[in-house]
Picture 1 (spheres, rainbow, N blue to C red):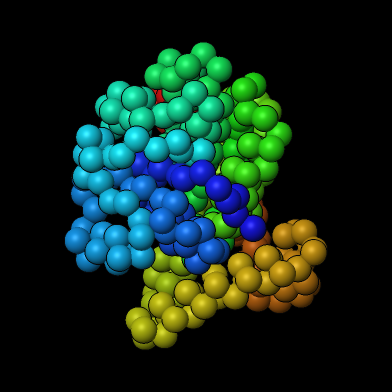
Picture 2: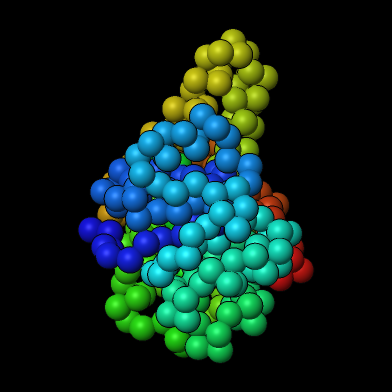
Length: 273
């Protein structure tokens, strides 16, 4: 159940902000409680939201003064400074600020608001579009337990949520789950290409790669077994899978390659912050 009562301001309704909004409305958050501030919201997106009762604004001056319970910042990190300047006058002293911008730290957000402003930094990923996101969040010291539970409900509308107490871990989170869907999509690309090189027609290779990733992911999500056990269940001694894993699990195989990739993404997240 999503928190009721006071209204919510969503700043930025692009891919992530839009995904959250769609899931909130699908989970019975009344559109009349939502104000969307986005200068680039397409008309075919804005019109049905307005018809449903949401307030749509292209500029901060168009946002009516409302006692917002939550203010979600779903803007690009490069535009966060400008967004903070624009929305600061619209925020009540007890509004809970929730940022989903990669690399933007709590210490960057805090100066825009009161010294005791409750702020949550969250890192979701793109499967939010289908309600299968992995979001990791951290709250500052001014977020009460009730407020944290309410934010959890809003974030859980797009998938699973985990909370951490050490903000330094967010850079690793970004590298693993924030960027992680791209790694999986690349796996599907490479698997399809390998299938084509092995002689399969392009359409069959693409179908096999896509559905294999989809099916394996669904099995991983439904099973209580660890990934390593599921891998072993597919692998017969001396069989075809074992032959392939001899390559993927070699000293220069997938594990060290992925470790380097995650470390590179982590360092980039640190630099962006």
